[in-house]
Image (cartoon, rainbow, N blue to C red; front, side):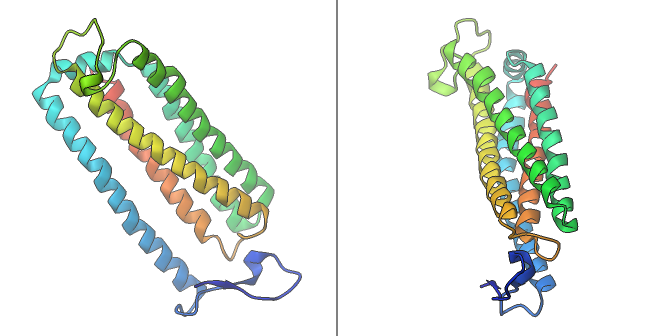
Length: 223
């Protein structure tokens, strides 16, 4: 397990000592990144199942998918897309700032990333989930929308809620990781010679953003 040396007068990142089973801090960093990339492949497999279900049912019931997409507001989806793109930039900038020792800028970028994540969740719940449920646009057997034109519209909402809610859960997990990185950056844990957690948190956040880049056109821009 990695440790911190007992040298006084230095920040935690300056006193960081790599785990004993690694020959160097660089080797430890590479091993952690490789392990995290392997973890991200499992995340891709998770969403890959959702995308497969989407394409199968869209092929079988194109009219239901077209009707369901028209019941979504593409402007809200576009706004959330912009929010996540901004957060990707600020997350990348926070990694760069930690690497260069610009800690104040790093903390501000992490904080902005957190705000963007919170804005995404707020828009999704307050302007999409709650209004839809209130008029019966629910998944599966819970569906009770009186103006439905296609019998398979409940299936569309099942795929919609499954994909977007799992993605929203990943956004929340990413926010927890970013909050932890922000706190530990403030405490001096990360710096130019030790920023592994900052980097892997950024990888996770970029994956979350990338998944949404696929979900947005598939759900909101069906013509």
